[in-house]
Length: 356
Image 1 (tube, rainbow, N blue to C red):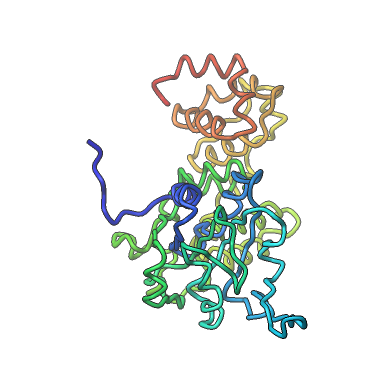
Image 2 (tube, one colour; image 1 turned 90 degrees about the horizontal axis):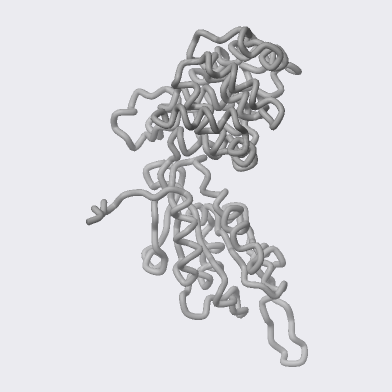
């Protein structure tokens, strides 16, 4: 029998599935800063692209005119509310409306958006919302200390779920399909605690993560790692000093200093051309950090022509790194078909099934 852990968190994918399969429920998705809550709209919109439009609402930055405006009806000598076009209610399809950071909005804005939360006849002003439309909200944890609040009558209309911070495995699965720089992926692979949560009491001294009890100007999160990827990918154009300064402002000094070592690994590795030209004699890195950088870089670079010689090169690595390459290559949606039709890769899978 399945054991139910009451009060547990859900992943972002689980939260998105709950939202899609329960269109008559108004979910409030709470979680730590920068963990990807806002990206759920694009995930849901992609899944429902054939039937729904998507509308993003940045609630803390909205004014009343961003929601609807009164318009005079001269025939009836009354006024009506015309919804703002950003809600896309005029386009003839059900809408996925994301009220991002709803819990930080100004009270008049929340009051005006409140009718959207009704299960029966949700509306914006006097305009009814299609019953197949999906409406959900996001916000931070109360313990994050970033100004989230909600009144009791609102809470009674919504279902609150808490999403967990993605761990290194979940984040890497996303990163491999999102063009994240191999150096950043390798760093996360070697420093998985950089994605730990401050809600875990054992992480009180973790220098990388967000912690509301400490004064911080920057910290590691899935969001800041994506920004760091842009900085690292342009390191040749900016030089080491500017790169480390930018990383410090992005992910904090501790993480920036540690990531600099992985940048150095990248610059010391054998070239891709030399590996393919002589897979059985090209230099093999000796440190874990350098191996991680090379493996994650190879996942991005490998193609139909280079996979076979790279598999010959990979055989000279410790089994841990061989498995790391195989698992993450298969997690890449565009590279997976290529891998499964490659004889060298298929032979490796057959011989190393126990590693997977």
